[in-house]
Image 1 (cartoon, rainbow, N blue to C red):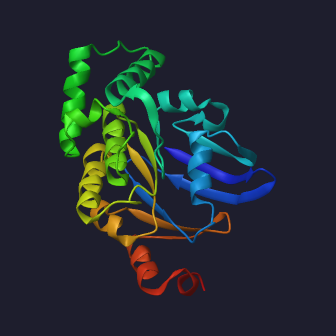
Image 2 (image 1 turned 90 degrees about the vertical axis):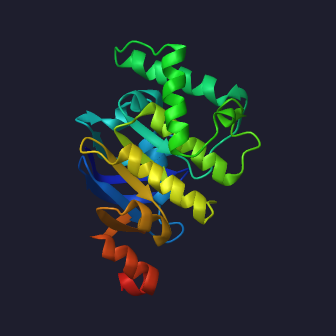
Length: 247
């Protein structure tokens, strides 16, 4: 589903990704772990098309398309979802308004009919219930006044409503307490665990992987994938640390 080949990317004049190669087939949850400054968030932002990240070499193919040739909204319409490490606030715009406009814009780009207000609200209620979020929260302004955990749960509701084929989740466990982490992890499983979908899950901690249970784990260090293995690789990292495992 996603093929990254020899990807190089810079922020400003500083090279961050230095020949990253990674393949993620449909049906797989692939966890990326690595020390601070390794390039994990840069990888997520490059895939999402965030401005300020310059690709200087390599290629990314998503569902047979050249991902890097697409604008961010085109990547979203093609089925890519980016979950932010720090979800932004959008004052003056309600979650319901934002999500209905986003969903119908994507449906229009794919040649599909827009959802009616009633159809959208039913979908929103179902996904909010999955993440144990009151619908009243979705009537509020996007992330304004939300706690860290509420922002992450709202983002997972957004993912459920948009129903992407591929999700890039950048430290979704950041700012979550134990109970919220279990709810968010269960939401990821319920929304994205399917033969036709895939997930790139960026995390520092085993605790989220205990819930989501990835199929493969890779270590990103120095801008490249330096090792890939099964879930046991994450357990080694938790027990021994990066220096010991990579040595």
